[in-house]
Amino acid sequence: LRRTRPTGPREEATAARGNSIPASRPGDEGVPFRFDFNAFRSRLRHPVLGTRADESQEPQSQVRAQREKIKEMMQFAWQSYKRYAMGKNELRPLTKDGYEGNMFGGLSGATVIDSLDTLYLMELKEEFQEAKAWVGESFHLNVSGEASLFEVNIRYIGGLLSAFYLTGEEVFRIKAIRLGEKLLPAFNTPTGIPKGVVSFKSGNWGWATAGSSSILAEFGSLHLEFLHLTELSGNQVFAEKVRNIRKVLRKIEKPFGLYPNFLSPVSGNWVQHHVSVGGLGDSFYEYLIKSWLMSGKTDMEAKNMYYEALEAIETYLLNVSPGGLTYIAEWRGGILDHKMGHLACFSGGMIALGAEDAKEEKRAHYRELAAQITKTCHESYARSDTKLGPEAFWFNSGREAVATQLSESYYILRPEVVESYMYLWRQTHNPIYREWGWEVVLALEKYCRTEAGFSGIQDVYSSTPNHDNKQQSFFLAETLKI
Image (spheres, rainbow, N blue to C red):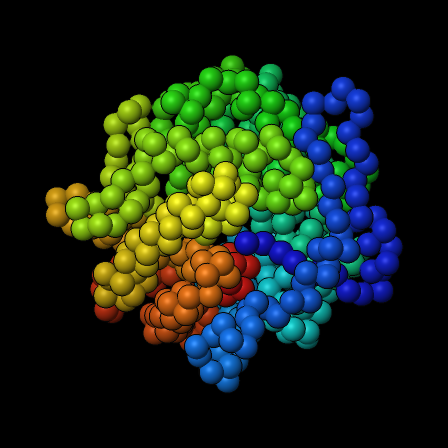
């Protein structure tokens, strides 16, 4: 999902530094990583939508108009944030103020940093300069709270790295490296599996939560950013930390080849056998296939781990409902919960992305599987009154692809379903995926747009839903960008 393209005054120096990372020393138990900056940059010169004249059945004027509409939505979301919440982590559009939350340890401006690449790619130049100026002048790292390692990595580190690669501006590189250094105490555990929460106070984190588990999707979703931190800083510690995570995961016994969601950072053992491709597990699998691709298809460890995990998921979690909908259930010690979370809907796109490098006899199968899962996730949207999807949906008691309780019926501007539409469109150029994406745009405009920004809604099955008063930073970083 995240991030893309360099131009700017420091471009040549950036390109030189970005062409490769020093090879692992003999005896290193690391995965190879070589980032071809020039190839990366040249690819970004392709048309944003990847179309050729004969591949779209829609008039290009309509595509351009739709693109301009989404750009207007981004401008509105950004300008509302700037007016009412600039420098705060997220906008509360109903009360027209900002929200800090407790996930980021005192860090501010999550929406600014998460929006950088979207603003740049949409050529919203004035807004991008506003965001860049805030990072340079007001993004301070001298904070002392407790933060989610995962959230700081994907929103802040990911946002800063993307902005650097897009522009070559040193301010983004320097801030990313310094913030990365502040995350390192989380890894001070007996196994090297990091804690989910890191303290930004000086010194190590300590053992106030020694009995707690680390979450697969959190410690398994650091690899991409941390390899780039090593590349851009020359400091091997970042790469060493995530390579050790791989080492632990490679050695530990997996039940039926599945990766449970909870691991003790003290003992290195699974804490319980709950497996999910949705929340708690999701981005671990995504980072495996993307590590393979980012390495120029040299990280064989990531490739093998990904396809082995996918085979186990297909064997033990994949189901087809009586109504013919393909879904990935959750697994609890051998017992299935016949539900999918909205977060799991990224998997259609992931499987499509990985289909090309699967065994030849499996490629067509994975493409079809990706399409079927994406169709199921579309059904979760189509079967609601708002045409937006719930946080989780079930397949039981004759009801399919719908939430069964109000506590799972909310929508918080998440990107995963439209992410899969994007990947499937890129792979197939089937216009249905653009049509489905446009349905989401219309629903967002009708049900989520307020006077002062976009808000999540509390019940997708109500045609007059209540708003949750939060414009998530990932709405600007991902949902609108896709």
